Image 1: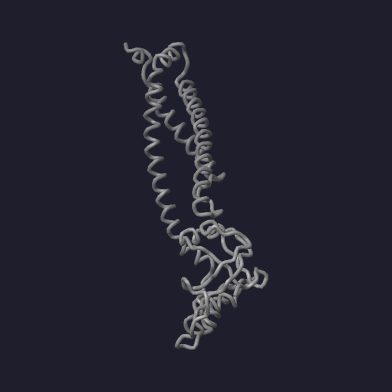
Image 2 (image 1 turned 90 degrees about the horizontal axis):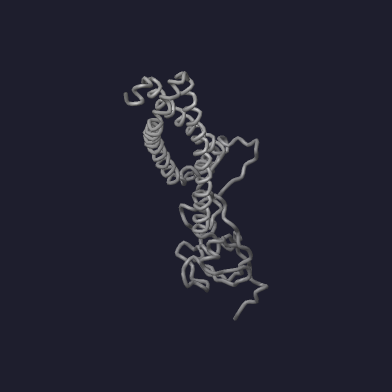
Length: 273
């Protein structure tokens, strides 16, 4: 006997499940805690009704929140009415976990203590602590990226210094001519530092543009892969400010070291005499 669609109850599924199972709003599906369970089964020894299947209609497709813990688990989510979930799961009046919403003026620590002392086996946690615990994989990846960043900065600093020394050394005859014309050492050093700063600013702009484009590409790929609005890569104003500041410091420092080295060399020696 087929139940009319209008008499069936509804559920909500997340977009990842909808895409994987090719479901849309209005489709009729059977839900159960065991594969192939479509009819009520016998009661268990504890007199708790055994899980039974139920035919339902997909009433909504919800978008996932930006929660790193959901991405790490890779679960497919279904939202049901409480009595539906109770009947399908066969749990009776038991629950594994539940969430309590608190007001802005609530004493969270006191609420946690009261919940923990209600009965043996209760353990309350802040949602913030649970998010941190389930996001340890992302923390490890973040530390790994930070370590790679430090190594890259040190290596690039040495490379930048070598490039600046070579570039300035190629202009030794020009610098010697300026010195013989009466241009002071400080003026020569100042001009090279200004040039290094301009090059550093230009490189920072190009680097920020490249990083922004790479961030868009990474988010586009992984958000489509995991079907989540979570941003896996971000280019924020503090990051841009830090990158530009670091580039200026390294560029000016490399230009200063390279220019001082030549400015202290006698002009005739720079000509090779």
